[in-house]
Image: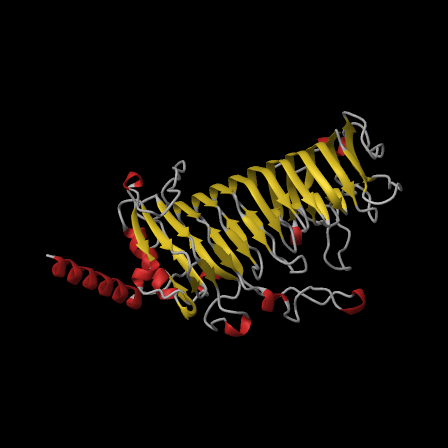
Length: 468
């Protein structure tokens, strides 16, 4: 009986490998189609299944019968875990097998092993909505651009596509090995004598979720991504907690968590230190709750940039609370390009401690990355922004509060309450800067934001304002 089971197991793995080796690749989305290593699960029918509320995922990989999950150890599919071997095919086979299982499944990346994987897409939907990627060991890509496969996309490393109901968790490490990417000549990093070298150029996002729903990401250490550490595009119902993201403060464009066209997001109890925004929120996002984040050194928590190349952007119902931002270029920031359209509204920044932050509170509607951005009349409308209980210290090179709003479409209903920001050194305090900004102070602020204009200007009532 035992020998029969072994024979069946061997035949199953061989047929799985033959299936993977003979199927065609995914076509469709431009960036995804450039990847050489693509998981072969069939694409879903149209329309895709509706999302359901996430269910609790197993907290460990010990095979406890109570969780009733089947464990698929990547080493059982041929992964070595020596940090040198190419483990891509083993991971894809483990993914496809678990994804086709009817019952909840765990793909186990065991501890005390390091697995090198090429740029790859893991596709769904899976038969079970209870899939867990349990990372207890270390995952890493090839070491730098020269080691990257010529047939693989240099814009992304690991992509999860059309997945409904997945947990990525564990006590392991995702090491993006980004140092050689940061030093590319085309990167916008600091040159000699205060100059900035040109950029940008292609380099991979470490972990990207695309058109997926009901996702949980928790407990991992993620470091040294070549570009963004996590990116969520076109996703619904995302829960992120207890992450540690750490990258050099000099690493270019290494946002910790970036979301775009993604709704119903919670980001909780995480530490992020990197070379760009610790959290960045792009166009098409709503219902985002960020709580208990320690951020810095970094570029702070940003909404935007929005409206680039005259595009339309809508962002609403964003809350950032109970967080710390330290030793960062920015604190909480809204940034838009001239010429855009759409609206940012319903934003709350509450109970945030600033520790030596250069620009603690910023709205910049003249955002530009070069010196050649012309003035334009169209703008993303910014309104209904609340700043409450924001306290701490700021770098005296810049004002603590900076509201720079569009000439043609002012910011409205900016509210400050309990704002107390003092210079980190000395006693010299710069006055807030306001341009075409309307709002009020519910309490006295430090420094006093007396530059705010009262009421709502007539132009805002006109029909051309795009309120999304």
